[in-house]
Length: 440
Image 1: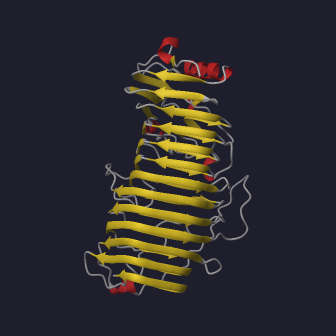
Image 2: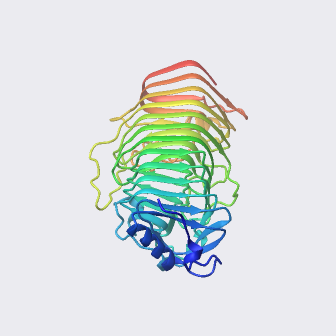
Image 3: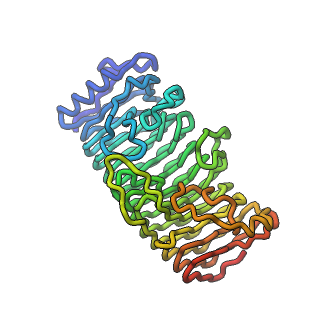
């Protein structure tokens, strides 16, 4: 590849005021014609609208350099319709950096991408059309590493039907816009997320199958998450399957931002759920491994949920059958300061959750549950949104299980700070539940 192009030597002005969209896009097009290239950003602030990237392109955003997103919605390329139908694409897609049907793109350096997400609060009608910082669809061979990602207008980064994605050593802060997810992997395969730090108003790391394509072969390791919502989640969009997902080595703590955005699950700086495995739109979950996680003060440590919501989506064939969930390992989870609500493993009468092992783990809750909570009947909620509060306060302070088969707890400790009249575990319509050194 040819030598890096210093963008400041080609008319790009790093003063944070001068719009650079046209000149930067011109440089990208020159790289496209040349079969690839590297654009280097020395220290400075580069104001720009949406840039459409090309194959075999490297963006080197160096120390002290910041790409600053334009506060004007009209400055962003509008993919309308979205390259793929998915629930949050109904108003199209905009992004500060984007590409469709490309390969071999690298975005790195120690610099910053700041989307100025708070600028878009006045655009209340364009929930899905607010700009992400990064959006890639049907791309292969993506590397994003070493960057500080700040203040997106919507989800921070969205990878849609991509393969060979590597996200490494990213520092994410997303609290200014709406629906401020940290990382969204949607219908992708062969993905590694490693050594990332996320503090977000909505889900921190979220796997989706919103376009109906399965998400498979994903490794998430050694990440630090803070969120007002869910730390690690599958769904909500779950029209396709989740297969071969490995999570190993997460630390989950309360967000540094105390003020909560309206509408997020839990809406609390302590976080709604640590591990939320949900599949409610016809997709299935199989071979999911979650290991070595510590979490502090999340309202609910773990939920596993099958449902039958199947929210209609124009342009997407909705699965007719309900999904399945099997082969789920939860190991080495240590939760402290969890709330009163209780977690759940709840399937469907016609599709029980099967083959779940919870082992070598400890769960500490605040306690305080009374007799009324212990006697509470849990509604069906077959078509409910799969959140940790979908069933309200549960009649077990640890896990409530229903419509499940072959569930095993091995070397698991449950405890509460305050006395709680509820048992640690309660189950209904469960076939084959096993306890090995489970105390509570």
